[in-house]
Structure formats: C-alpha cells, structure tokens
Length: 231
Image (cartoon, rainbow, N blue to C red; front, side):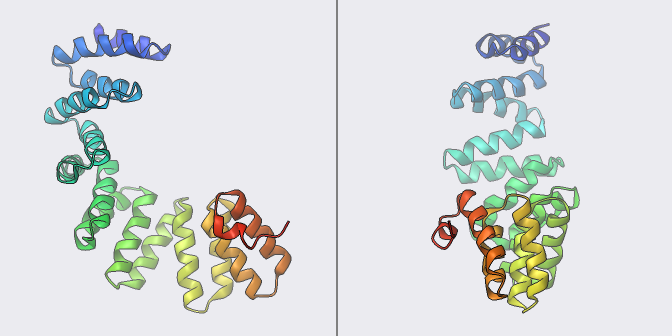
C-alpha cells in the first residue's frame, strides 16, 4: 500500500510525501520502493539520503539501483566505490551500468578494462556505448575496429559516432565520405560535427554551405565555429 501511495503522490508532484511513503515500504523490505525512494530523494537534492536508499536496493540485488549508486559515488569523487557499483550492475546485465563502467575506467586511463563493459552495452543496443567502444579501440590502436564500433553508434542514432567516422574518413583522405558522416552528425544536432562539416566543405570550395554549417555549429554552442561563422 505504501509503495502504491508513493507512486500516486509522485505522479501528482508531491515528492516529499512520496518519499515518506516509499521509505515506509522500503523499511518493510520492498526493494523497488528503496529504488524509488532514492530517485525521489535525489530529485529533492538530498543526495546522501538518496545514496543510502539506492545502496540498500543495490545490496538487495536491484541492478538499476546499483547504477544509481555508482552515479552518486562518481559525482562525489569516490571512484573506486563507483566502479564497484557499476560493475555489480553490469554483471547483472544492466546496460546503463555497463556503459557507465566503461566510461569511468576509460577516463581513468584504462582502455583495456573499458573494452568489455562497453562491448557488452554496445552489443545490447546502447549506441553511446558503441561510440565509447570506438574510443577504446582508437586508444588501443585498433582503427578498423574503432570504425566498426562508431558505425554501429552512428547507425543507432548516436551523432558522436557519425562525427568520429567523419574524422576517420577525412584523415584517410575520403573527403566525400567524411562530408556524408559529418552531415549526419550535424543534422542530429552535434555541434562539433557541424563545425567539421564546415571545415571540409570549405576545403572543397563550397563556401556558402560551409558557412551555414559553421553557423549551425555556433548556434549549437561550439565557440570555435563562432570565430569563423559568417553573419
């Protein structure tokens, strides 16, 4: 009853009251309520209490709660605790946790350790993790595998993957192919992709199109593009 009451209260925006109801259900051993309690408390800015609720649910083997536990630890700079929580989530096939684990260890300079979680999330259909896998392969000097991973990201609708393919194509001298990938990234709102599109178009002598791409990049918050964008 308390869990259902919490859901109803949350649905009408009464988060404080919802948290009280969720806490009662959580204390009664309803794991899903502990997870909902954590989410409500985090929205309310009560992160220490949220972490306790998420950690309780993670200990009870809710993998989604483990991912949220990892996020809060990471935000607080507790990297080892975050890694442990993400790993538990990933081991339970929670793909967001796998992607987060990959990102954490890649940022820590451990691309070899990032490969497996990123690949698991990518294989599960998480396009951003495919792009992350591309970064891993690039760091490991495995360019063809990086391109394949970025292609999966791009085809999955993740613009950064398209932009990465554009960079790889341009580096290889395949400028028309690069334009195509940068265009896909730019059309999806990726500001850096728009700026790169502008650059390769300018090299091709298509100045009007280049300026339009630079303007779109600038409007998207790319300061480097603003410096070269026309009126």
